[in-house]
Image (cartoon, rainbow, N blue to C red; front, top):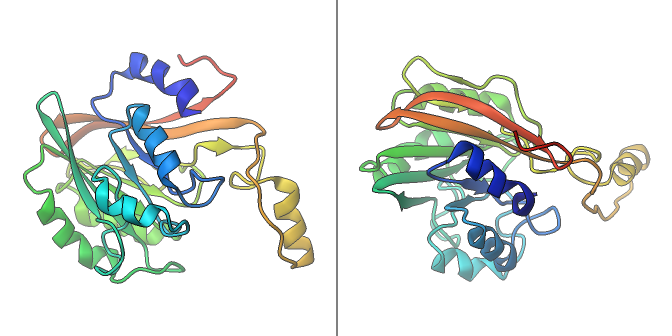
Length: 245
């Protein structure tokens, strides 16, 4: 989907930065250096991750060597990788912070506590984007309010379903509870619907496979109104079959 649609989106929107959550890029779960390299070769500036970060062992040393890919900052310090990165384009710096929720997910510390230290690492950046990878909406909404006026944008990931609450908060931070997924809408959160239905009906395990029915690219486009302030946020929801404009 990115290979097919990103060039047209670049022409249409002229973004300064492209940030992708790649946590399910490897066949629907986790990421390997192969997928990460492919995303970066497409011109993606930074990759964020989530609860499947360490699924594939070959990514562990890659996380230490490649600064443009980050895992949740509030994981344990002993776990591979880093939770923030800084990228630059046209003289503008973007700090990217990745966080994980703790409700129904594993993380070393609460995101609303760990974020203060994370922001210190990117405090000098012109713009700051926070990817909050969380299961429940309350953790994402709370983080958005806590960071309002401190960062350019707080975007939620993980649930694969785009939410309709995108807006610029009163302090100037763009917010959305979940950007959705880039994957097949004809499945169950991206996986083959028949397999998901069978597991839910039989309570027996089954190997999940990614669906290829009705693929969509989902995300948001954030416009800046100055240092660490957003002017607007809008959803980008594009079908592979639809024209880019």
